[in-house]
Each structure stands twice: as structure tokens, then as C-alpha cells.
Image 1 (cartoon, rainbow, N blue to C red):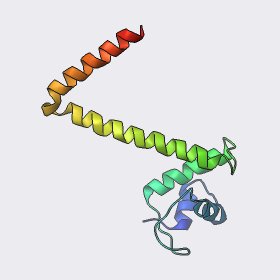
Image 2: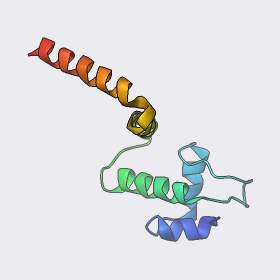
Image 3: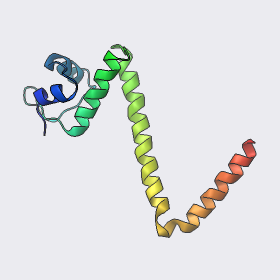
Image 4: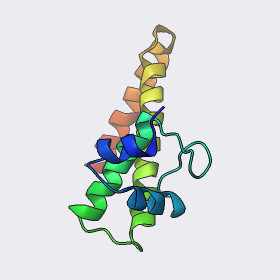
Length: 112
């Protein structure tokens, strides 16, 4: 568990005021209550991302919710694909894997 001060340092020396704004804007969702927030490693990664998006890429207040929502959807889709891949890699899925590869090949040939 990480304090807000530690998060500020690990996120690239951002201010507590900035982090509080991110929390108030629901861009960052720590555990705990105001004045006693606790952050996880995933919160540090998200804070770094927000700092990069606002700083280096110049994403503004209005655009940030859209960008974060799209990134959240992308990460969720990636997690789901990793779960699907793990399931397909299991020995019990050999027949399913073969049928799926056949279907994908048929689709690919239909596009060409």
C-alpha cells in the first residue's frame, strides 16, 4: 500500500494537488477516505499515464475522460484475449483450437 506522497514521487514528482484533482475527476480511484487514501501499484501506473497524457501529450480536461475510457476498454480487451489464449492453449482445447484456426482461415480467404 502506497501513500499519496509516495505516489506523487513515483508518478514523476507530480503534486498532491494534481493527484487530488485526478481523484476528484474520477481519473484515479484509490482505496480509503480523503486524507487517508491508499494506492496500489496499478494506481501508480495509472498516475504515470495521466501525467504523461496531460504533460507530454497535452490531453486536456475535456479529453481525458474519453482517452482514459478508451484505454480502459483496450486494457480490458487485452486481458480477455489473454484469458482466451490461455484457455485455447490448454490440452483440452485441442479440437476447438483446430476448428477455430480453420474458421479463421476461411474468413481470411473470404476477404482476399
